[in-house]
Image (tube, each protein chain N blue to C red):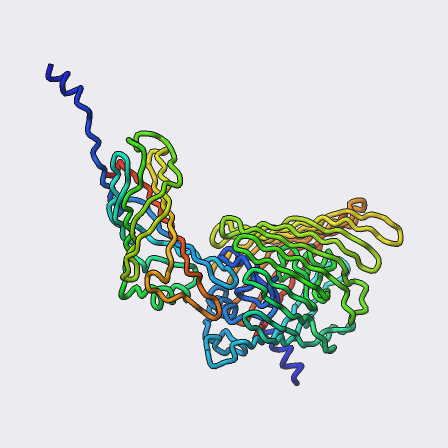
Length: 366
Length: 186
């Protein structure tokens, strides 16, 4: 019964596991006004909860934007306690010459909880994930957990399990620049991270380690740098670089990214990364690039139609490694706690016919 | 003979009064919220009053209605106006530019005069304080423009430091004004 109720909720409602980097156009250059995590995403601060209503949702109000619809302005609550429930799922549809398939995939059912004081924070998620082909969320695990210390207002150190800061750091883990580079959901690693959060510059240095609890070979070990500059008060220009290895290859990934506020409502998020990968067994170099761009327009508060283009072409000596995806989408946050995203488009591998696909992402954050 | 005498008498430079109600102007402020260093940009302010352009200086006393300012978030605007600026009680601010020193006949030379120091006064929240800033005067176009920038401390004007859910606005706020002066309209 509980599972049915959960699935019902997840179908009805919906995505704010990650940050909304396009909020730089409203003056939010750093993520830390809204998120405990310096690189964004995850549990919201009380201010972030209020902003999710006042700035980002069509009909939300601060008074119900707190944990389980409480009021974050209520001063009788424990001011250091951070808590948030994340429920997320996606309904997918794919139409290829061989198969037409629709599928609902539960993606996340996490409680993120912790303590956050002026200097110190400790945060952890507890939840369930799928561990077999059934895609049911039944294995208990912690997606991320970390300890954070604010040495000054500008210098923040963090150690624990979380996704490294790289590029746009957007919420969409299926893009060519995330999934294409093996930085998909579930690839959180154990990291030591130092952040400089300045008025016009942000820098993050991350030492990335394999997770001792994971058996997967897809875990990275390496180092990454992410630097960005606040341009014209409302746009971000950045570069990211990574050097590291997984069990069967070594690689360098680097490239620029931008979040440009073209007008108050029109924005462009774009990133392109060059990868030079050396396969250990053969010493063969695979060089190529991957890119993601989204042009969005906030038609009314909370409702943002967008066009998007992705390309992954990570081995320029093999044309069949080219994969494109493009289409139209719309994101709607009708009320604080609820976030929907619908996307419909085409996918195309080199020399093959384009195929249709669509997905509806549903998120609840309580 | 009389004509020759009149020709030799130098023309006196008459001061030009520019009524800003008929001109394009704007006032904005920039504040920073800590600890995340979020940028708050208040826009929408318009200047009312007369700017006096003399032979080698500009001065004027200008008014701005505080209810005109918006920061992009309704709740923040409401807090700013009701709780901190108290616009029901103090609906206007006055900016007095005492003097921007310029070269002789600056209006007759097409040039951009940058970062010229000026002094003045700001009357805000019922408190008047001296201000110091810089001005840019652009006479290179058909319609000259005057821009000023100065910093103030919110606490100087007996305004409580704005605080909301862990974010505190820094005491120092930058104010920028810009006036396009279409002298033909005068």
